[in-house]
Each structure stands twice: as C-alpha cells, then as structure tokens.
Length: 147
Image 1: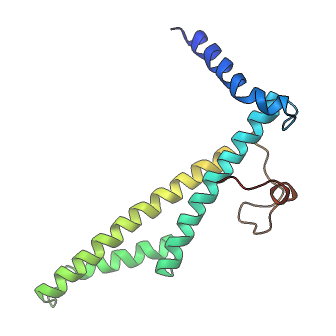
Image 2 (image 1 turned 135 degrees about the horizontal axis):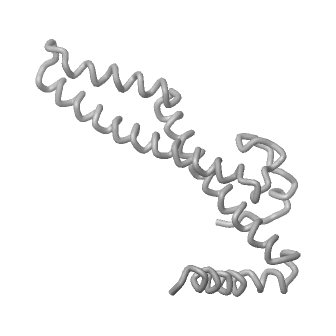
C-alpha cells in the first residue's frame, strides 16, 4: 500500500471517529475536534507525568538533581572498608531500589519535557496560565473530567 493510500485511509478513519462529535455540535468542525482532542490528550499526559515527578520529590524530600547527588554519595559509601558485610548488603539493596527510582524519575522527567514540547507546537493552543498553575481555566471548570 502506498503512503498516499495509508494517509487517505487514516483520514477516512479519523473523519469516521470525529463525525459524531461534529453532528452533535460538541465541536464546530472536524479540525476543532481533532485539535481539542489532541490537546486534551497531551495535557493529560503532562499531568500524569507531573504527578509522577511530584511523587518522587515528596518521597525523597529532594528535587531530581539533589537526589542524584544523594545517590552518588550513597553509592560511594559502598566502597568504604569500615562497613560490615550485613551493613554493605543492606546498603547495597537500598541503593539498588533508589537507583530504580532514579531511572523511573529520569524517564518521567524526559517524557514530561517531550510532551511539553508537543504542547508548544503551533497546532496546540497553550493555556493562558502555565502548566504548573493550580487554578483551572474556565474551560476546564465547565467541561467534565474524563477518566
């Protein structure tokens, strides 16, 4: 199948999915529906990733860069000779768990940056307040939350 046929088939599928929203006057046009739905999806991804980052910050009481430094210091402790075997095993297990969190935290931060970059694309309107703004916009207050 050529690229043109794939795009045409995708466009027909998109119109089929969007058409009921336009017919019921939920959106004024197919373009508006696509733009709104994509924007909502991007903002949902941003929100979920921000929540993950905040969860790590609250768990450790540190920001990511502080946690990296802390983790480096904890890892350096493993090379000290004055630790007993039991202390070394306990510390090693703790550091391994913290390294797992570091990796998850790093991935969440990188994905958040990526999704925020999509939000900045000219096709996606940027909300009047920053993403960190706690107060919902008028549109968010009047529109029911989707789960």
